[in-house]
Image 1 (cartoon, rainbow, N blue to C red):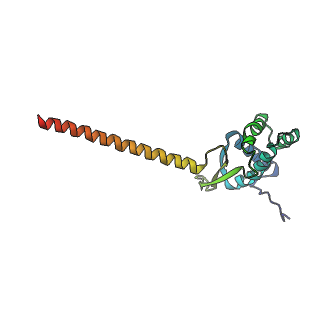
Image 2 (image 1 turned 90 degrees about the vertical axis):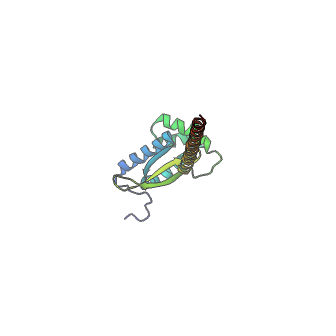
Amino acid sequence: MRHVKRKGKLGRTPSHRDATLRNLVSSLIVHEQIKTTAAKAKAVKPIIDRLVSRARTDTVHSRRLANRIIKDRSVIRKLYQEIAPMFQDRTGGYVRIVRGYPRRGDGASAVILEFIEKTKGYYELEKAREERRKAEKEKKIAAADKEKEMEKQMTGGQAAL
């Protein structure tokens, strides 16, 4: 019986599930932001939080514990040298899950899993896009006004002749 087994099965065998989660953790560390399903993101979040908490203290023991999960040395190096120092003053909650739309092919709920500090969140990106759109719109309006002004001067000059 499963009684209080907290880990979701994700429709995989245990070895396949472990490999999937390890790959997701490595990808998140390398890219600092990944797009995946909600179930996988919920399964990865505690693993990455534990890794970052351990990486905040750079000891041989913590590196060996990280090597159990992440097999690539360059990924471990990035975790300890770039990501962990960002979170030295934070006690937990290093990753956020931003809900997205259902995936087009199978309708699975897609989410963005990202580190809180370094990457711009979804809302910040949307805000930046809106500001860019407003600036472009104002630029177009200014160009149209200038063109009307030039046309007015041209027609006004021809009417005088």
